[in-house]
Length: 63
View 1 (cartoon, rainbow, N blue to C red):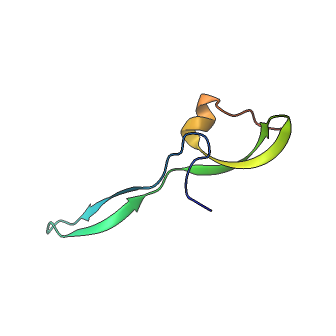
View 2 (cartoon, helix red, strand yellow):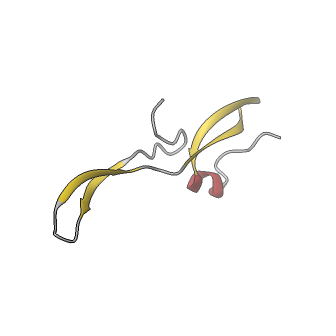
């Protein structure tokens, strides 16, 4: 299962950890994904969406 939002497609970003001595090592920033029960064309499905899509109301949560 990919670490990506199923609504907007937000994926992990790449960059560097930079130490005080200016040493650089690769690292990743992961999106804040939540598993939510949502309505999709009248059926209830579990989707992994980022919190920005959740707060924006891009999915309708199932009761």
